[in-house]
Image 1 (cartoon, rainbow, N blue to C red):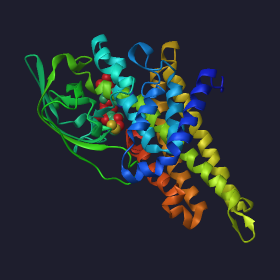
Image 2: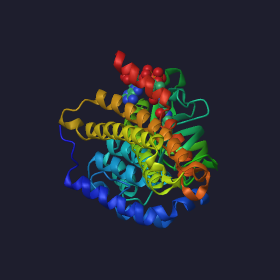
Image 3: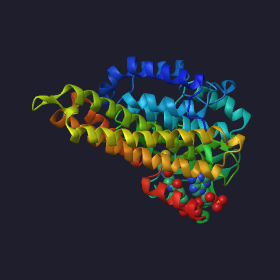
Image 4: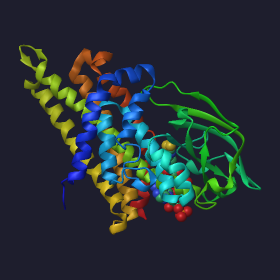
Length: 385
Ligand code: COS
């Protein structure tokens, strides 16, 4: 067992940390306020290769490990959770699906611009009646000559507002549930794809959470991803990696809040001594650090499993550990941000101190890419198999 990062992973950590601290930290509050990640940040991330960390170089990526990707999302999310999920949803839910299931032609046409950061990716999976019950999608596809024609409604599409590329999950026969589902690469500028709105939300306010309607959208037949009826498998597979991405985001949020609380506890004086001299605060810090460390081990281990699937690591292990990492790290993020806010007292409630943003950002990690209740369904099903 080796708990050390490779030299390459350490370099990624240093590079991303330095970018996050220098470029992102000073404007994280503005990203939240203005509901937008500046184009200059997207350009900077692209120049560092962070839109395709583990995608091979021949397809526009940086060709590094999956663990490097997890570290990237973690370091970015320490200062800006919106930018963390921009990278995570783009990579895990879109680029990854094309990388793992796409043809050479699909990779050249769609993966290269995604992995190099010229285009931003998303997945169109969730619907008003298909959230946790992902197999209940009602968006239809019907083959007509050289096209599939799709109709339906999609919600909660992270990154949808960029209107670049998405993975569309739709059914050709709803009565078959997950066995009737297909996946497609969809250009979000196609005729019939209407962006209804970007939601106004509690946290990760720098991201687009979009609502789309699809009316007679013609998708070229060569945009089918994998084979017909493989769509649910593709969605689940990308979520297995995606859950590590969200776990990394949650870990980063928790670490960012913990660091701020630690710093504040050492500076703030009440009753003639610093907060860090009170045992009540010391115990809070100890508990926060303990949970963060445990979350980190789960996140890094699941990323390591994903990196080692070709070297004998088991896919079942990936499913169970990625769900554990996601549930545990997200619960750590909500717990740690709550405690960090409490340590800041009244100032924690004031926007200038940033903890209130981290507290708001943390909550979604318990919900998206599978609620933590769904993670427990996945974990227990695997345990009882
Ligand atoms: N990884 C790989 N395969 C999985 C899987 C996973 N995590 N979870 C389920 N599957 C497979 C099952 O093995 C089964 O395959 P077979 O047909 O070959 O047996 C198939 O998918 C159907 O599984 P199951 O019968 O368990 O499906 P259910 O409809 O009961 O629901 C859950 C499965 C709840 C786990 C699934 O719908 C889910 O993950 N929901 C949450 C969706 C989500 O995360 N949405 C957020 C999107 S953010 S963009």
